[in-house]
Structures are given as C-alpha cells and as structure tokens.
Length: 333
Image (cartoon, rainbow, N blue to C red; front, side, top):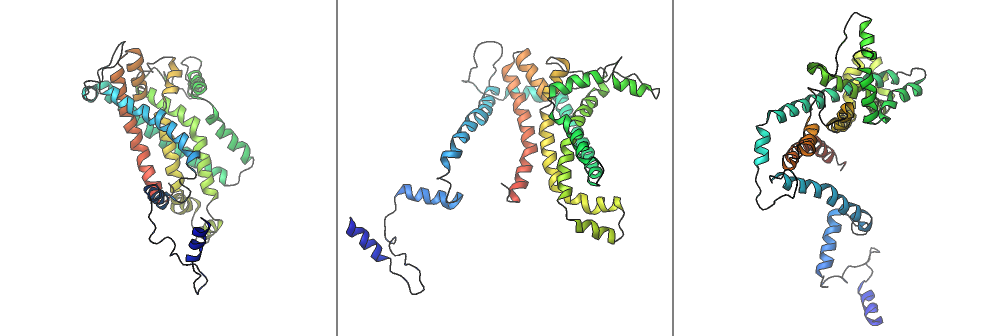
C-alpha cells in the first residue's frame, strides 16, 4: 500500500511553472457515487453535500407538513367527502371545482378578497410612505413617533378586532362621536353592507401602516445624500424631488412590502373571526378564507371546503410567484 501511495505521489511531477501535473487521475475509473457527488457539487456548490445534515431534516419536515398537507388537501378536494366518516379516494374528479365556479357565494368571496387585498395594500403603502417621508425630514422625537406608529403591528388580530369593535360601536364608539362633531352620522360601520368591508380595510391599514413606514424609512436612509443635494442644486422642489427622483428608487422596498402586506390580507380570517366570534363575518365582508372555514367546519362539506382552500392557495401563489421570479432574476434566490 505504501508503494502504491509512493507511486501515486511520484506520478504528480512538478511542472516548470511551479504547478503539479494532474496525470494521476487520468485513466482512473470513477464510480457512480463519485459522479453523482461531482454533479451535485458542480450544480449546487462544493459544500452542498457537506451541509446536508443541517438543512435536510428541516427541509423534509417542511415538505411533509406543509407541501404534503397541501397535496393531501388537493386530493381531498377531488372527492365528494362530506359529513362524518372517511373520504373515498377511489373516484376522483373536479366536481367540487365545477360547483365552486358556479357558486355566487364563491365569486362574492373572491371579489371581496380582491378588494380587501388591493385596498389594504395600496392604502397601507401610501400611508406608510407619507409617514416615512415625514420622519425622514429629521423631526424631533423621531424615535418616539417611529415606535408609536409601529406599535399596532405588535398586536394580534384578536386584540385589533376587539379594539375596532369598540371604535365602531354605533352608540358609544369614538368614530361616531368624532363624526358627530361635524353633524355626520351615526354610521353602522359593520352593519351596513356597503361600508363594512372598507371599515375592515381601514382597521387593517391602521395596524400595518407602521410596518410599511419602517420599510420605506430604511429605503430612504439607503439613498445617498448626494442625490438630495444634486436635486436641490438643480432647483427641484421638494415634491418634484421625491416624485421624480426619490420614490422611483424605492421600487425594491415597495415590491417587498407589497408582497408581505398582500399575504397578511389573505390571512384576515383571524381578524374577521375575532370581530364576530364566529365563522360568519359581517354582511359584505365574506372572503375566501371565512367561506372555506364555514363550509368545512359548519356545513361539514370537507371536499368543497378543500376546493375553496385550493382556490385561495392558487390566489396566494399568483401573488408570491411573480415576486419569487423577480428576486430570482436579480440573483437574490
């Protein structure tokens, strides 16, 4: 064995430029395990297999309990499972999806979900941007204001729902007391079908505008001071400077914050459930998540509820998918 090692070392003759010849590996038979390892390392990097004990177990657990559950939910939606007992997987079809596409309650929930996502995201980004610009102007007690605006985000949906349930109270709520000073109202914010959804959107904007403010403030602080000075030197007004120079550079912050806010909007079930302490939200605020839970757990139509859940998942995928492609093209994934 010593002779073999010696012969192997002897084969690596030093070159005239100081390197070592690679003639020792030429002609050597490479096994399938080595070839697979080389391919993995060539595709994912040299530390891919060495780091597998650290990332592989949580990856498998997530695949089982997250994506495995989604896959199982999809197969459940292809059955006609309802009531008590077990699901029959011997006959799978798309009957529940056909029923969902012809159900006006589903379309009403899709419309409300779309309005909630768009209204909440746009409103939160706009208010967050205004707050970030005001704080970035170097006002006094900046840290105190930043904490005050960010504090509502630390509250759970349950606390926020109970808080706004009191704010929207028809007789004693602060909202009606405030508008009463101007001779307006009182309004039934959660009892009026035409404004109930926007009352929910306003409450959610109140909770998450601080998050948008922090994201935009970080983006503003990352812009070099030279750009502000150059704009002022060119005679640009403050509004024109922000509109034409500063805000376009916040594109990355806007996209990241918008995706997070849209995902939060799709999870508004907690807020609506806590608002009424039940599966049926105020009239006019029924969204896909509340319809899904009510269909599954109140009506025990498990397959139909699973089909609505898959529709909601596809909607969420339509939001997060373009963002992932955008980040991949920027080599951030």
